[in-house]
Image (cartoon, rainbow, N blue to C red; front, side, top):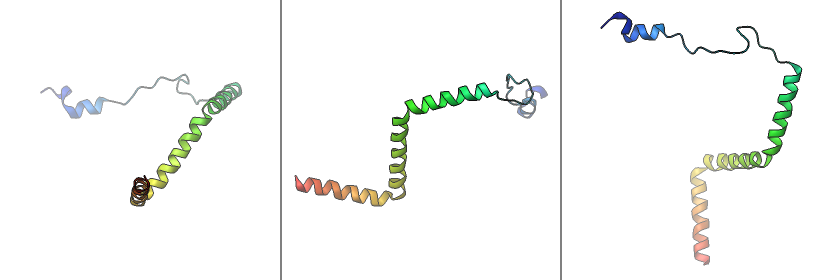
Length: 88
């Protein structure tokens, strides 16, 4: 096997991803107009998605509560289902 195709030499030749950005290796800087436009965009997006955000927050809170008390949650759920079935 030639030396150039061996796995160790192939991995040593790879230098990682080649990123191409608009800063061309200079320090990036944001203009005030860009930051204002970004802030306006984020405010608009948050306003439109407020209901979904609230629902996701409630879901995460319920999941965190139930996950930390998994066995107790199963026992309470079984008791509620049993009581409901007995009441019918």
